[in-house]
Picture 1 (cartoon, rainbow, N blue to C red):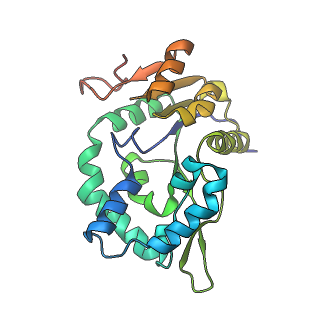
Picture 2 (spheres, rainbow, N blue to C red):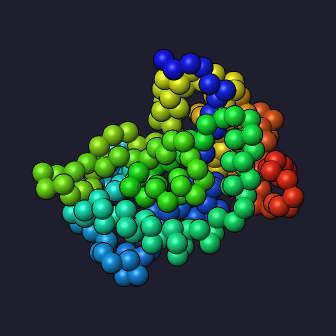
Amino acid sequence: MDGAQAGASFFDVDKTLLPGVSVEMLLVRGLLRRTIPGRFRWLPFLLEGSRLLPRGLTVARKANKGYLAGFDPAQVREWAEALFDSEIEPRLGIRGKEWVAWERALERKIVLLTGMPTLLLGPIARHFGADFAIGTEMELDARGRLTGRRAGPHPYGRTKLDIASRLALEHGWDPRGCSAYADHWSDAHLLRWVGEPFAVDPDDRLRREAERRGWKILRHELTGQAPRPTLS
């Protein structure tokens, strides 16, 4: 184990650092509208959804990457760069960078922890200067093409906590010295584990949990005058 470090700050991306929308939704929209040079792969998407459905509708929807079947990973990375320039960066504003700057000042490592394919994370990780960027790893076939299936865990729900716990063990982070930012009830496992949880524009269920536990609730509005998040 490395020498103990101050801790880490775990950031969800979709609807947390990126307000009100998900990266995959933007990508899918681009593929369907042909503003991105590729095709949405309907058959692999439907087949993968059917395979995942016994694990629940939410998993079948969120963990389903079948629409990427047959593509070269390098091509998907190119889409991620173009999508960041055209759709993502204009939406980011200053709020996420202020939160990251605050956490950096506390000497915490910055960890992006999201269910989207890791292939899409590169430009976002660079934008925020993340120390770790963890998403869904994708399976490759014998030709080096994407199969549309996952090659590892899908960072969602309790699995995010498992990943964060493993990182903490590897790097000597005390959970009490860590923070986490997330918008959805599914991230409550992670938020309960850290010493400083932030519910960002939370859904109703997470908002109720945050209010009950006294967690800080962050809203869209930022003054731009201070690095500390605006609290409700």
